[in-house]
Length: 432
Image 1: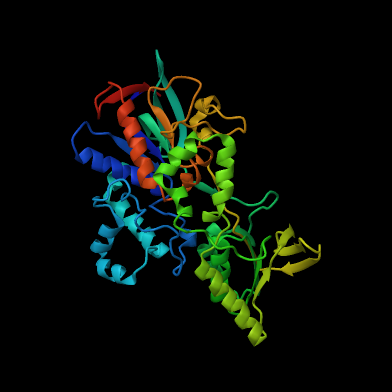
Image 2: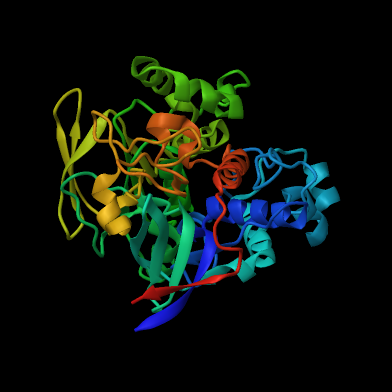
């Protein structure tokens, strides 16, 4: 049996902020001079969504609004956050606010606004189930991308935007009383009206602090126990010089550096992003702890220099002091792990191509400067990664800071490497 398979210059796997930014870059490129670049994106969610479980009303972004989907690549873009504010009738109000850091819910609304402008190139509710290489005499010429709805797209290039996956410590299994902070708002909705007595929050970063603050507010009869190995929440280093680690030029410098230098840079500047909390939130939590000590009713308890050593499915947590070895057993209605995320490994989706992607001595994927995977065989096009490149490109790999610039570099690579092939819009006949 044969069927016509549409050929696209790019098929994007996933449609989070990174591939949304790429779709915008494509739209702007195609509106100008030159041959258009055709693309389609497949997203398993039913609509655009970005960390919906942590869209706390009071939470702000930790990145400047100028590091939106477009501005660092194209400051005149109609897809900018400022243009969104103008369309929403809030531009003057935002200026008077005198703040570089919008509410997280507002930035998510901006993403949705931008996504609606390019929704003709994305299929929501459609999950990629397999990628099959199509060979010619010189190697892999195309990729056949099959989706959960039975459709198949043929791609000259793949852009993998598979995002991050919630990470739980080894040996911890999620359940009714044990969950990752990415589910926070959904779980809080379910808990309203149940009169919980105690929560345990594990973690020392921004998300852990936000979870502790929200649970403390939402459930005024409940005790919130924050557990972390540090003496206290550490402030994020957002000083001007330290923020240079997020500059576009820093990607070049990091990529060219040797492994010892890369390791040192990540250690030096980890506090700009990892296990670090906004100072305002730290101060607010301290105010709450102190106020409760004055009032004699301590609901916000900090188990610092401690770790959970045993957690049962029923919510019983054994906490051990790292200095004295003393153990405290707590019965909790919920144990929330704010223990970060890990990049999704794209290779299982690549089928027979996955094992043929080259890795370094530590088993990490080898990636070119233009974010292409290195393979042991020739590819006419490329497999590009949006995320999962921290070991090669630095700390901005999975952050918004460099997204606009990164997608411009990926698009330019696709254009520069494009070979004379089928005209855009032509169909190929594929045996299926």
